[in-house]
Image 1 (spheres, rainbow, N blue to C red):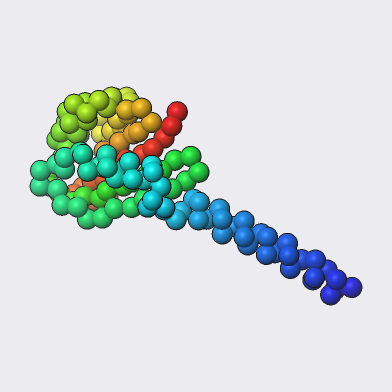
Image 2 (cartoon, one colour):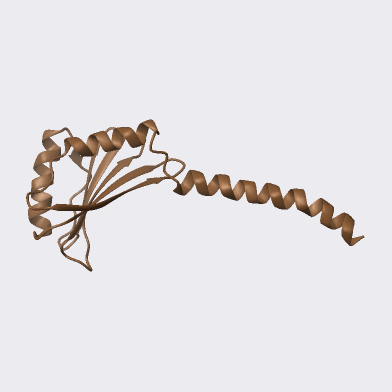
Amino acid sequence: MIRKGLITAIPLLGMLVGILIFHNSRCSAPNENDPHVIQLKKLASEIPVYEGFQKTGEKVIVKSTLIYYIVYYRGSATFPEVNAFYARVLREKGFVSKKDSPPGTLTADYRRGDYEIAVEQSDREPDHFDLVFEWDPE
């Protein structure tokens, strides 16, 4: 009796493992050849880097309906200085500010079509800044 249940459970377990592997690969493993990843990296290459910033890393995150390309920087500047620079640069490239951030907020979001760019400063490490390039179709 136990043997029959075990034989039935093995294919179900295999199917469950397959579904989990597929889900994890779709949600976390970036496909560098995805056209949206390529476009986000191209967009990032067209945006100038704030003077004095040093790139410390990058990361691609792929989810079912969103794709992020995050570039990490370190530099000595204040968020208002960095945000003013990117507000001007991004406006020149056709991006619009999504909303005015409340005073003290360390994030600003800009949008053009299906693409968003967020300028962020770490609240724990004030010399860490991120540019988050996002494909987010509306």
